[in-house]
Length: 112
Image (cartoon, rainbow, N blue to C red; front, side, top):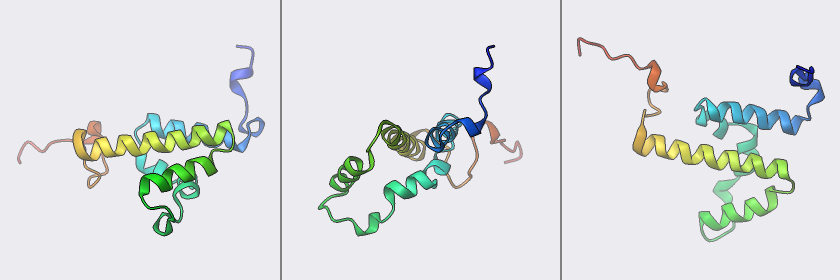
C-alpha cells in the first residue's frame, strides 16, 4: 500500500474515531455497548423529562437539534440502527440479553 491505510488515530478527528468505534461495535452485534455509549447518553440523556407530547415527537425534536453536521447525523443513524437491531434481537431472533452471549457462544448441555 501507499501507507494511507495505516493512519494513526492521532491523525483522525475525535468525531471520526467515535464513528469508527460505533461502527465496529455495530458490525460485531454489540448493540448494548452502543446504547450505553457517550454518544447515546448525549442523544438520549434526559428522556425522562421530555417536553413533547409523545416519545416519537421528542426523538424527532432531538434529531433536529442533535444533527448539526454530517458526522452527528451518522452517529444518530448508528444509534437508531443499534436500537432497531436490539429490538429485533429481543423480540424475534434471540438470544435474550439475559445470557449476554452471542449465538456462537451458546453451547447446549447434552445432559439437559
